[in-house]
Length: 254
Image (cartoon, rainbow, N blue to C red; front, side, top):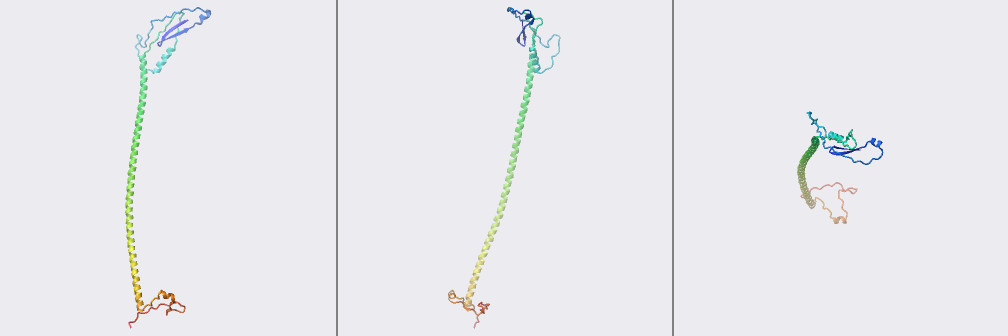
């Protein structure tokens, strides 16, 4: 049995290698033997791109994923010494990578991610600013529209008030004219009634004068009409109807 210690990737890996030939030759159980573990102190450190006589420049930067995949593949490899025997320990020299370059690549990738995130944040900020500007413009347009509506409403109200005032003035004028006409008509009616009354009075006075002088027969009183029938006039006809009235002339002075 061989125990192989490999200081690969800063950790010890213990590999147990069992040889089938030993068990086939001696199938009997053997007593446990002490296993001597020896660790070589002279670990070989190999730095890339620092070999004597090699002046080549390191390759260009690759992504951080490729570096991590290479390190993982190397960790999975198992080193088996061809001349391994029982009681001997072999050690594979581990390689120290350029960790500063890896850290630089990782920081560079992080810087790119931060740059992308910063660009996204700047885009969002610009979008928010544009939204604020759009809202401000909409507010200005709404205020301007409301001002125009208020101005139009004030003009309409002023026009209506003017029309109402003019119409009211016209109606007031017509009402005054109508009242004047009504007053004049009442005055004419009063004058006509007064004239009619005066004419009636003059006619009555004239009739009484005619009766007094005998030009016109005196009308019978109401008592006489009830007691006796009215006398027939001289001009009455055979059928009892009165004939045409023949006015008498004025009495002679003799």
